[in-house]
Amino acid sequence: MTESYHRVVEASAIEDRAMMPFIVNGWPVLLCKDEGQIHALINRCSHAAAQLAPGGRVRRGAVMCPLHGARFKLDNGECLGGAGYKALKLYPWRESADGWIEVAVPDEAPGAEHLPVKPLG
Image (cartoon, rainbow, N blue to C red):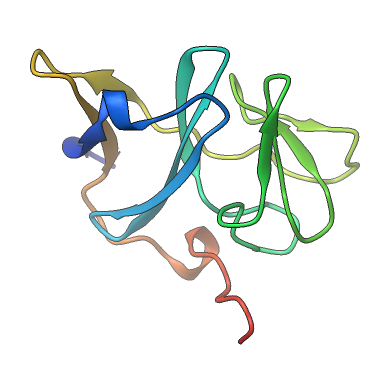
């Protein structure tokens, strides 16, 4: 599966503890910033396919799912304390010379197993 980088947002727009959801080439991407470090991960909890943002939180190196409170490490996607929860997919990212965050997502369209369920309401 090949991947390409896509320009997403200016780095200066991401505040600490921010959770910024985007759709990048069809893929649900969540950009987070914790203690000055940016992370790019899938915006889909591996437990019930819920969106992590909006509604979740970033704290102490982890993102928390708003549905059941599952916490996932930002540096490797591993679930903290949830038996049977798969690690979250992380996306490679880089900052361009002109200060934009670019995220690499697969060139192929995401399957249903990659997309979050839509929130009720």
